[in-house]
Length: 171
Image: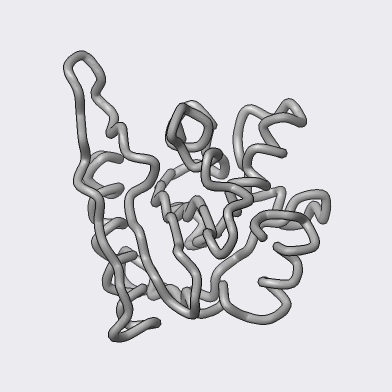
């Protein structure tokens, strides 16, 4: 399977897992708006979700490497990208990354991703999970045949929300 096929299938799996974690809540997939010569979506993210009083802006990515290059996350810092929604009360912009070869799913607040980039890194690395300099959240996941069942309710744990507030990932 090509990487783009895995990416689309991960988006489908994300949708299934999110709905299982938060039944009866709002989740909307923004359809890819590809314009003219550009081959990537011009949307700020893949999904919008509402639950527990938060608007979640979620960009899903997958990689077979131990890193994901910022060049593969144009939604982060382009005009009307995730960066434009950081600091808005009750809005939580996140990048969700599935590291296929390592069977891990992480959530990176967009503010932390920008800080990583500003610090001169070209990518988000799994090695950063152990580096307390950055707040990267490993989501509890169970390996299936190919995909992982991921528990997104972890993002609402008090210690996760408090750490994000301390680090000013959102208001």
